[in-house]
Image (cartoon, rainbow, N blue to C red; front, side, top):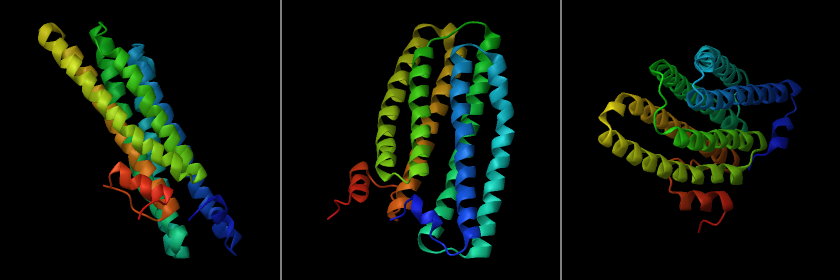
Length: 241
């Protein structure tokens, strides 16, 4: 099992520093992505096209961070040929940046919808759901990153479990909005923009769950992707028969 102390167990101080640096860079990227999610939601519900444009402009910075961290991973693999928990750390980070970059992409999509809705000039239905689900998925992203920082498999498990709740609320909001469009066909284009924003939030929740699963793999050494939540809990808590 890996923990924070494992990062400083090498004879080579330089290797210790490289591992700590790459982990820090991942968490810095994660902090920027988390802010992007929050800003995108706020831009939409507050009709702030300026904030939405800022979210879109940050996307290029996030893409560059993904490339830089990828290059760091490749350099460490080539130079150090890590094994065991070190190898799991590098693999987990190289996969985590993909999910973080995609969360950034989904936030940019929400920002684009925010600008479209600002230009239409009329607030549609669904903003309460956007704000509520948006806060939930932002918290999922935050807690998955906290789990990564602390090597906390239990916290990661709670993030994975919470994704089911987000999926349920997304489907409920979708049903309400479709009903509203049927009752008022004039609202279709505006409400569709809200539906696409909700869809992006649901995907952000999925990516946060992916991050949580990587933490469990990192800490426990077990690939829990495609496992049911009950089996995942058994792996984390060591209750598997």
